[in-house]
Image (cartoon, rainbow, N blue to C red):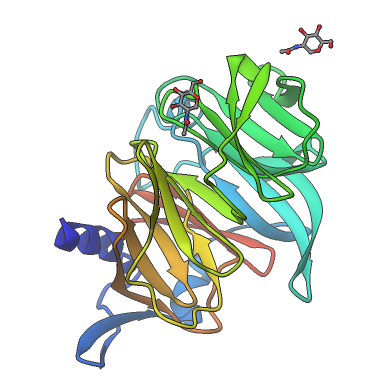
Length: 301
Ligand SMILES: *[C@@H]1O[C@H](CO)[C@@H](O)[C@H](O)[C@H]1NC(C)=O
Ligand SMILES: *[C@@H]1O[C@H](CO)[C@@H](O)[C@H](O)[C@H]1NC(C)=O
């Protein structure tokens, strides 16, 4: 299982490199992804006005529609949601949530901060904003208020069929939205969560301000072991739609495979210090979106 996950990560990110640029480091092989490899002009898709801090590529009918005639030579452009912000001195000034397709952006929610989509063939996409929860209106390409909350939301996640919605509030509390938005239930054992992501089986992965990583499952909370000591930054690579019990976590510059059983392993993939994207969005193993310096890149593997 571990090898398989490693392979996936390597295929998926190592797919950038025809002949892997690898080096030996502390007895292990490291695939170093440099600026030159990642931010190649051939992958540049779009220049935004602000930094792109979140990319959500829904694996829903929204995306599949544009993938009907799957022809990877023509590199189809998919429907993608982008969250933009100005990044200054580690602070983030929100600049809205946009729909991106075919080289064009459309503002969907000026105060939107995060997006999550179901992974089946429904077209359900939710947005978290500074004044509550919204749902994407496919016909008008706009956002409709969902439920009666006015919480300031910093992150959002949903499960396979889009029926369960989890919102992370600005005061770092995690809620389960129930009764179609009428109620919300505080998940009391989740404390100080900074970012959340679900795997296919609805295990909830999060980390706190001490940079400790945890998993909430039906039995309670597990602390993740195996991450490097003294880690300075963490970021989940985004929702993966495959039926796997792990998520990928970027820990400083190394990609860690974090399993639902609470063990994390370093993948052989490392980003060079000047090549850290501001956001990632994955579409299966095939298409990989990422952003750097206000630019959106797309790589077809
Ligand atoms: C969230 O609520 C749904 C019911 O709406 C429930 O099935 C699910 O288990 C809840 N999730 C957690 C983590 O409690
Ligand atoms: C929202 O609040 C209004 C007025 O308080 C109420 O009529 C409505 O049923 C509520 N909607 C939900 C989804 O709770």
